[in-house]
Length: 157
Image (cartoon, rainbow, N blue to C red; front, top):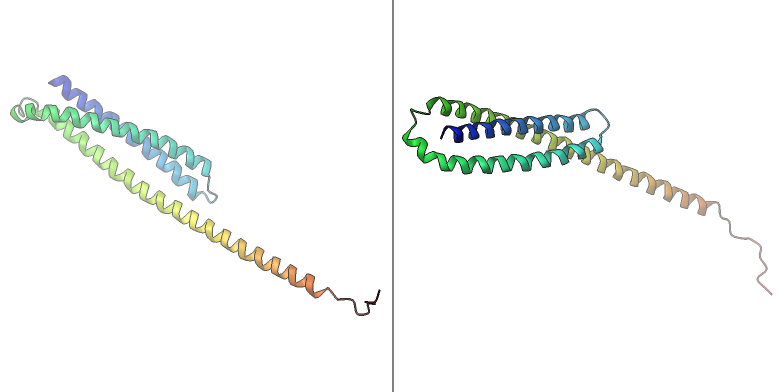
């Protein structure tokens, strides 16, 4: 029973480590868009790494839940015996939860930054199209205005 509680504790420690890594990549993503010029390569690399970390986190969650489901019945009857370990587990769960909330907040901020960046880029493209179209129309009009049809032409042959 104690070894299983230790496994749960280690699982929570690993989850904390993974969440801290995700937090680090979130900060990198934020820097990619706040430094003035967007660094899309850095952003893509961070997204890729975060995807791997999220998969790892999901596996850790599944393993933790499975182990906890097995232990929950035994813990109900022996709470006093394992009170100290339960206290430590509760503390780690609260740390994991707190860090998860922080990561989710970072994700929302990054999502907003990305949306703003792409909206600005779309507007820039739209503006460039309008400018190009205006320049092309001007060019066509100027070419037509310089064309003077022949005034004296012998059409007999």
